[in-house]
Length: 398
Image 1 (tube, rainbow, N blue to C red):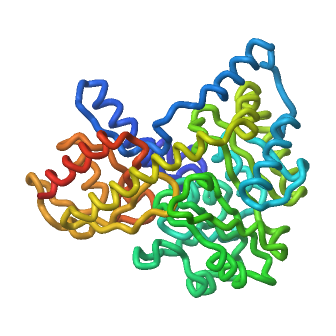
Image 2 (cartoon, rainbow, N blue to C red):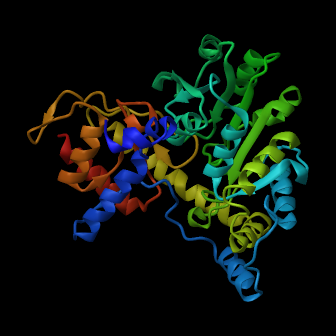
C-alpha cells in the first residue's frame, strides 16, 4: 500500500486531476522553453477585463475597501445580482436567496456539500464540465453519467433522464450553454426535462455561467423560470466569462433561502467572504455599460463560424455547431486507431498529446469531459491564432 493509499481519504483518492489545468500547465512549460505554442485549451476569454471594471477595483483599494465583508457578499453586489437575473434571465430572487462565493466552482461545491451525502446519486449528462463528477464524489455521492450524442447536439433527452432516475436520485445537473459542447437548451427542451422530474424530490443545479455568450439569436431558458420548479432549482453564475474576470474569482448562487443559508454556513467555515475588492469590481461589471458584452459576443460568433467550417473540413473530424460558450467539441473518431508520425492514436489523450508535442497546438482531450472520442478546443483566441492552429491540425492528420 502506498503512502497516499494509507493516509488519504477515499473521497480524495477517487477524484481525478483537472485535465484542463494539466494541459494548460504543460503548454505553458513548453512556451517557457521557447516553443511556439498555439493554445486552445484554456477556458477563459482572451479579452481583458473592461477598463471601467478595473477602475472600480482600483477605487476600492484606494478607498481602503480591503477588509472582511459579509460572509455571503456585500449588499450592493447582491442587489446587482438580483437585478441581473431579472434583466437578463427572467428570474425573480430576493437578496436573501443569493450568496456570492470565490468563483463559480465554489458555488457549486457548496451546493453539493449541502445537498448530497453517502448513497445519493447525481445525474450528470456527458459531455460534462470536468469538475461536476469530481465535486459530487468529494461530497460523498455517486455521479450517474448519461451519455449524449452529436446527432442530438449533445443534449440529454427526456427518455434518457427517465431511464437514469432511481430512488436514490437527488440532483440533475444542467449546464446551458454547455462547457465543453456549446449546446444550449431552449424553452421547450427544458420544460420537457422538468416534466420528467415533476412530483419527485429531485433538485436541479443549473450552471448558467455562459448565459450571455450565445449565437444566432438562441437564448438559454433557465429551469428557474418554471413556477412549479422554483423551490427545487439552484442557479449558478458568475462574472468570469461574460466580463473576462476569471482571475477575480467571483461567482454567485441563487436558490431557496434554506439552501443559501446552508451554503453560507459552509462558506463561513471554509473560505469566508469572497475577495472584497473583486466584489466592488463585480458591482461595476453588472451595473455598468453592457454594450461591451455584445461587442465581445459578436466577435466570439465570428470565431465560432470560422472554426465550425474549418474543423469540419479536416478528414476524420466532425462537429456540431455550438450555440453558446466559446468551445467547439469535434468528434475525432475518424482519426482514432490510425498512426501518424509513428504514433498510434488510441484515444483523445493520445491525439491531444500528439498535437501539443509534435505540432505545438494545445487542446484538451475529451476523456476529461466523459467523451473519449472528442477534443475540446477553445476559440477564445484571435482569428489569426485560430487559423494557425487549424493549419497545424490539418497538417498533423493529412
